[in-house]
Image (cartoon, rainbow over all chains, first blue to last red; front, side, top):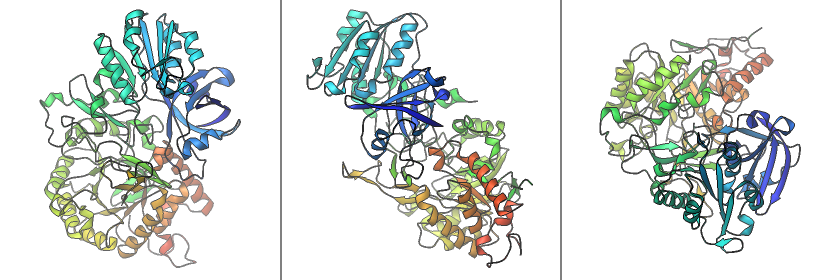
Length: 292
Length: 321
């Protein structure tokens, strides 16, 4: 869908782009993403770039905002968009964060621009009467996203930087255990690079609470067709499958993601060379949930 | 005047010549939210294998100029789950279904064909010959016409007689026409070409191959001229054999290109990753393009590029299919 750009602005080390997209805004739930075409209609760059949605507003019938940093030709093109340019977006995509039925204490932990989806999540949790505590980290001060907003919406906000230029020096997962204890958190929501998610999952497990993690893997289509974005995830039946981050995720129970095996096919994954089912009935595919 | 978009592949009539290509339409569920699956000529499934397959490790894809490189490794649930779950779902949505088969040898392909023939509702079979042949140092079946013919013969022999069998060919082989002729002699009912073109991308930052395992298949508009050339040559050599053409189709105009080269139907693949509704958009564009040409029936365009200049579309004997 062709969406007019409202604004493109620099925010520290990132860009924030806001587009008018009523069709996406009205269906959006926190944790979902959009897939953007880049380069223009005649471009030779044909793969879409996925971006987690950071904010939606009701203005102009519905606007959507996402963040990015310039990494290559596609994002460089995005950074040059101006008001009234048209952006080709598909979305909202992916399974959103599952929200608690009852008001509970939630700690949200995010690394770099990966923390973008935590903001609409925080608003949704607050609307349900949940307590929200936030831990945000980045390589340096200009990569810690939106400290001001975090302070405004959260009960407590803790910041870390690798170089100590802002907040506490060290990894974003370092203060997580203390925050969980002090806030008596019931659940962790995490976004960021894989090593950070693995560490956050370990901390959550130490405290006996569940964790919902947004997993990022290289995508081409964002719609579940190209099979590029697979990650090894253990199902409820104990069988590990290579599942698609774009449609089966991007939110997964952190405990089920085999972080140490990302980038491989675990030997015991369904369909791995030499794999044999334990029992006939065990072969139930998560795709069955999508049937119909 | 509404254009007649119907095409015949052997004895199977399809509503229009636009097909969703194997491996680019998922299970159908993913695209069903973007368009009505009954609105395209047929959907060709991901290649079905005997056992469930996890596929290759990530990263599986890399963007290349006007296309992509992919090495997914035939991830899929295996034939039993496909027959039990995926095929019935597609049929319930009114889709015409072509099933792509992939195996490790003629016997396995034959067994796949046999099991498939026990099901009902399959419109045609597409034999994915771009699979590693374990008895040939991992070269693809397409790399040796005799190996390809063995596989095609096994599939044709074990497939129910009312289901046409299409052999999917590759362009990056010593002689695509020789390969096509070998498949025709092995009683393929038609040909599907082309599959991806083998290639590699090396990341200039890491100086390592961009996809795990190094080599992958290149697809998208970058390969379209290679595909069109192949279709043209094969159709000239085997004018009676229906062809499903594929390789970088993006628009209705591209469909015309393949039809004129000799294809009776055209499979749309990689563009779907960019535009999930591409298939139905292309049907509309094709209809508009045909109207502009003043063509009443799409099948009149098949092979037009082979006819002498000045011959009207529809003049002369039409290729069957």
